[in-house]
Image 1 (tube, rainbow, N blue to C red):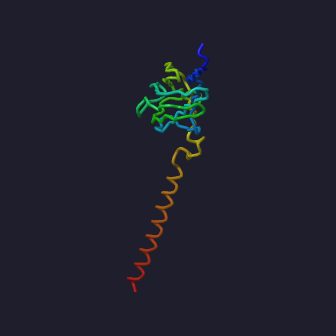
Image 2 (cartoon, rainbow, N blue to C red; image 1 turned 120 degrees about the vertical axis):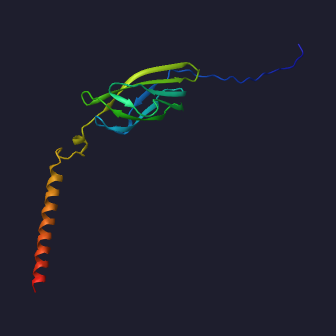
Image 3 (tube, one colour; image 1 turned 30 degrees about the horizontal axis):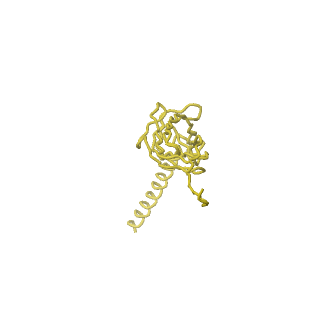
Length: 171
């Protein structure tokens, strides 16, 4: 024994692995009508304890809708307790019970580089134009009545002007 004390300090990195917990929603309760083209945002929320990375959101084609924009959107990394949104442009072709199912697949890696692929369906709420408060009476009768009133008023003022003009020439 030499009588000397030795100490050694080491730093160890430890990665805590947890299964990602994701939620997928359509924010702002966006509404469409059958036959309409519109913008659609799909919100991916990371509710888990671990960050996720390299997130891709795929919106698969369906008989209910046509994807007009690119159907694959890369949204990158999503930290724990954060979210990101993938934006699409779609044409709604078919509705069942006021809804249209959207077929989505999420692909991403967790903190330990484990690859995940999550196919799922979420539902787009679809309402009629009348429910949105933008529909008229549907047959255009208001426009026809307005046009008849304008034509009748024009005819009335023209006859009055013509009569006045004739009266001035007689003098």
